[in-house]
Image 1: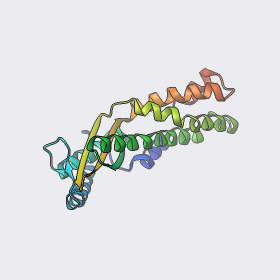
Image 2: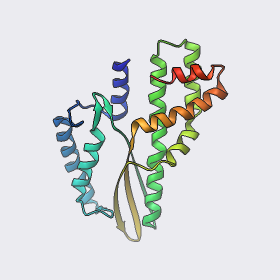
Image 3: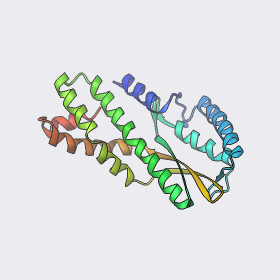
Image 4: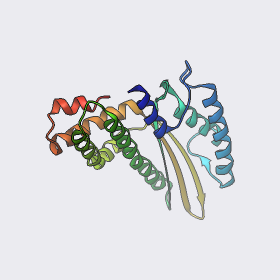
Length: 207
């Protein structure tokens, strides 16, 4: 099952080898390269870091290094998402960008659970279908759950032009914490939507 777990996380969040520090030399190099390229783009468009003394490049370097950090091979510490919005107010732009980033996370969590369920040899095809249906029907509650959480890390860029503010927000959440919270929400839905006992639901949703 470990091999499959690694595969799902690579699909969700990319690849990278594990180092004792949780960040391999190749991941560090990749973070530096991506930060430099993206900083050049953002600088050319007039973006600036928001309420931070860091340069855009250093901020993005930290973002990517944290994104690639692992607790063990293939097990990323954080799940990441990004949002962007443009409004007549900087505050509103950041609010909308953050909300957009949060709305993308439930889909990643659903993909994680559905992929595990599909590959689980403990369940029948009928049980798999029932559990996957419960996961898919949990989308709204997962969205509400994520919206209540405080990001572990937030990176913000802002551009102002002709009275309009364009905000870019990148969020990092502890992946294990979100999985556990999502599992609880999915269990509630599965209890209502399936004929499985609660003990079996809990058993089949722990991988």
